Length: 401
Image (tube, rainbow, N blue to C red; front, side):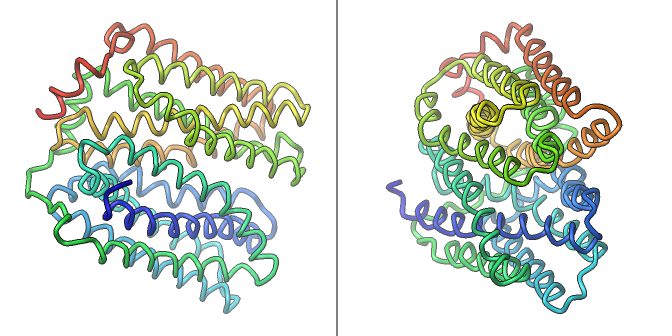
């Protein structure tokens, strides 16, 4: 990127995302241990973070139209720094309990409900409308590198120094974000123009009248509720085999990274997003069905890698469309809604799928989830405006509404 502010922004984000995966891995291990070796509290912890995103995200997104996005990001990162430090101290003092983790996870979700829409709008402020699609793609590359390397680093550090080190390092990683934002060059800063953001009700009305943007959110929901939520079932699918579980989840992460580096640049100029998103959903569901149906590890590794390819196509494309197509006053509420659907729905759906799998068959549950994703994609393809959506004709006029 040739924009100095964008380089500063991504440098801070890269360090912070590695810290986030350190904490995510350590937190799951911590809850598993302090609960006496039960997996249900791990899912409950994830849901504690998801609930504020679901309930508050769509409403708090409008703060980004009233308050400096830069200041909001700095403030939320400072809060998350303190939360990580507190959890690290509780672990170090051997007084951490599942209840403590639940409360801190809930507070983290509250901060994330503000952070996600703020950081997405800040990214547009810095990159500008000309470079925003490339910036979203680069953000996905950085996220997937952190996703691929963070858990591995967490395992090494926790094995050598204990769980608390992961929380302390995550706390320090937020300093990188705060410093990078404070160092933004004044002459290049894009200050917030005070504008009246759309209410949640008005935004929902807008979505109900625009089949294309409604389809974007439906795609995100299908990807998470029936696709990525199945990641939580992989340990059960592999009968608790840690090696196979790690390899399969790592293969999905590698597929996402491969897609961000090699596949998405090819699709940057693709002008029919409806067809692209439905194709990615069908690809993802097919890979999920293969993983569930054939208990042959090499084939499962290939299918999980393929699944990872599709998730990045879906994430980058949907986020890019929200950045460029809707009227700017909707962005705060839409990003809040996106955060609720993308980050909030997955843990809740995973808990529901785990409940079904525990009382039925893990293979049938995953196959049924894949089938639901296929049906959702086919229903979207039945919509003429979705199939015919051409961003060359429709994106520019609506983006300036």
